[in-house]
Image (spheres, rainbow, N blue to C red):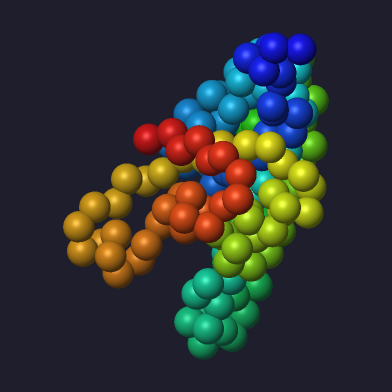
Length: 149
């Protein structure tokens, strides 16, 4: 078989947070999955990066986590809808932790061939202070990562 005819993408991970950029990335990822006859894994990570500050107000952290869980369900539903319209199988996944770490762990544990995600496009001092999930995933991933701006 000619190397150019090989299908390298059997499992595509779409990491989503429900944002406008993540929705654009999901569209790209689902379309690529359709072309490659690949399976999509739609992942939403409930971030615990700032859990220390959310614990300071009693009861607030549970409500905040519930809000993030609901937001995640909507984000995953959006990817599943795109998949259904394209005839692509979508496997939903929800994790809790530091988003970049969980995305990388999920990709490795599930033999993902490509990660597709959006970026918020932070620049300057904000990017330096906060860093971006996409940048961390790109920097540490052992598999290809497609970042949609």
